[in-house]
Image (tube, rainbow, N blue to C red; front, side, top):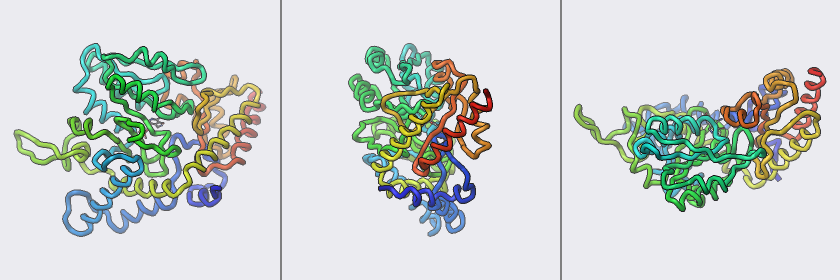
Length: 402
Ligand code: PMP
């Protein structure tokens, strides 16, 4: 049994906002006290730059910074901490792969495959690199339930395909995609796969070696950690063949006016002063997640999502968008004749925080012919009563608009 009250009590936001019903966890999660304290302690007691100073305080910060890299590697079961690149977030991680990996390999007529449900962060970087190189962006279609059509994917993939980039859990539909199968199909043709784990990393244990994934991206802020810090995991064979695309301090071996040689992986991809406090906070967030009973949390969130789905479906005129068999704790819905922004505004007056709009997945909204949806996304500090409150308030909104 998980102690929900104890978990919730670790998040100070709820003592500052006792009425807050926070159902916007897909946008960002709140931070436990341990993470806030770690960041505050860092600035109060250490605050030095990394890889530069040799005095004790600076050396200590560098050591902690690199220890977090080990921690992230263990968290993902990466073979080595050198597989872990610090970035500013999922978006930056994807851009790094697009620019430093794909850009030099893509030729006219080549192809990148993504899916119909990608977040713009896993769509636009590939679109731009394809346009620049005269390559094509191909889209794995989905059905009305929001499930990918792998039969089409098998037919699409060819020797022209140079990269497959897929979201693990869709932020607007909640679909959990069969990434194991997608990786296997791609590897049969030796095509590298990037998995966008922004929405999955907080809830599902991820083993990059078992998955055999080539690149994996996520952001600290959706994992109970700070904003402005993210991770790119990459296989050694790919990272070591990549040319950096951002240049400056702390990423070099030797510089003259004529030539520069770069530091080893992963440091060559971390130009300039990185988010040191963010790294420290991320390390503490991973400690926080590691001490949770993750199996019990998955079961709890499955039950909570099923309960919410059942109750929402009983509301006349409410349609759930994204009804895949395998879903995470994200529910998008549309209310007949009521704009999602109105729904979110009204819910907001009752301290219910949901997201409304296209969720940075405009093609998904186009596919369902909707201006947007209202999205409730749950995590470990949400409680069953919050589902009932949401349902009650949605009914009131309907009454108001009728
Ligand atoms: N991918 C998915 C599936 C997401 O949900 C998000 C954040 N909404 C991103 C990518 C981008 O993450 P970030 O803004 O932290 O870079």
